[in-house]
Image 1 (tube, chains in turn cyan, blue):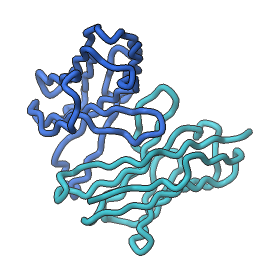
Image 2: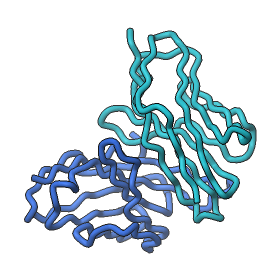
Image 3: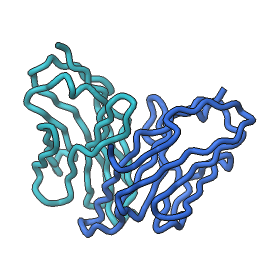
Length: 115
Length: 117
């Protein structure tokens, strides 16, 4: 069984300040973890993925996430928010082939960026 | 442009209508998916096709009927829908068996916004 919890449904930051979007997961297997972003009226786009290699993963647009097994977390960060980062962000867990590569999506965190 | 194209982008239909959503991918992927995205809910997987064969039907009502004539095209036929079926329907594709620990990276289309009156 696997699940993912995004701890905040809404996050608001000022432009130029750090972004932290929190995600905790549960998985019976060694998980793969993803962050996707969805801009208004668009589909989901992959930001980054963790697949049992380096625990600090760098993605597109300056985002990165750190896999912490002891905390079962995969939080998404960015040092300095830009107005174009305003979107909805989804944390996703996959248990790998042992779970049929099934993906479980979080409920999303909506990021607002204030000028 | 992600390489996954969905049409129409917006659709309004009555409960007695029959319509279809179309998805086309130009990425050479071998798996295609339909997801339903409703407000304040996680994405719900509806159907999965691997190499044109349906491998998952996630207890979807029969008023939704998928069709996958080849690995590049996926349809969702709609008939006698209910207002609660109003949602954003997302198509995605992936290359199954990437060799990276089963990491199944999806490429999504922009979605078809369906409103059922």
